[in-house]
Length: 265
Image 1 (cartoon, rainbow, N blue to C red):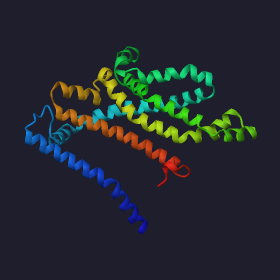
Image 2: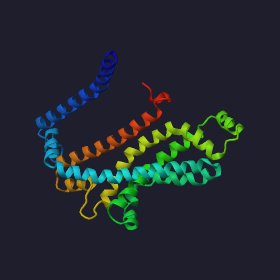
Image 3: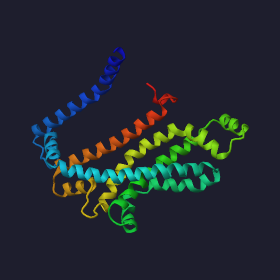
Image 4: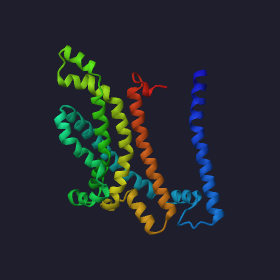
């Protein structure tokens, strides 16, 4: 019982400040828009956004599901290919110097600029949006995984070499476990970026067989001056990003909590 009460107090102490700040922000926003007579198409009050969310709940839910499918698929691809690419680069310094700049290029090229090419190569719809999410989110996975592998203590490498461990055994039993905190950090960043990449991809390639994600919903609401619906769609996108981030954080915490200090407490 004391332990349960302590955990409840800890949860309240963690959750109360942001909730109080959120309530204060929403109340101030509502009062300001009403007192100043701000037009709803410029800045709708939170009550109008809530009404739009309830009225268009079915459309928002469907759009969120479509965007979620592309974002999760792109995130899964970036996880798999990003870790594999980092392991490959870690095998050789010359190989890293030759190929790592191209990984950086994925992060520096604006996705909006190459989105039309994705439509030409993969067709409009889900595949192009998934590739967009992948391109935006893969670099943090590569960079953090590579940094984690490179950060393994030389003494541990020498110990594995002393006992005759091969390259694969060293990778599986030493380098990847040691790099796991860095990998989780990269995946947290990639989770949010995957949602951003999916929505940006939908701006250009989002229509396919009548399916429209949050990106298309945002554009449609903007053209109709439905700012309340636009805000509701943005909130759904934020909730999707937070959900994916939370899932990665929870998984990482479960993997690390027994042995790594960052997941304790």
